[in-house]
Image (cartoon, rainbow, N blue to C red):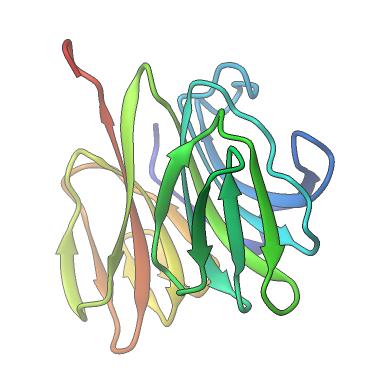
Length: 189
């Protein structure tokens, strides 16, 4: 893949797989893959009601609250998770039946989906000002707030960068980003 900037305005809304909500897809790999064949996908969902999440069998999902008061998640009718803290990722299986109860109005959340049979994924928060080198597992940088310099230009909140290895980014004071890592699974994992 080539390095490129993805501006927030480029990410057009589209319906969830189950049609009960809206998401703005940032990136999917490979780019031409459909929901049954992508390796990984990153998006920002608008959650406006207590609609159930779409099912994604075979996918490891990671979700993190971006804004709003959050929601209470119930997985398969038994496990609960309170998604109330901004930028704190929570991982769960895509085949889980997830229902939610909004705490206090609509929210936006960041979503990472990774095909379990092919790769591991993670969302890490980076808030340390200064230069940060990119390693081979860094698949995407998503700006939470503030300004970030990349070799291709400056990013602002909601923008993303698809980097390449052996490059870097610079966080300005008070900036925060999600560093999305995707690592191929090896035999026995």
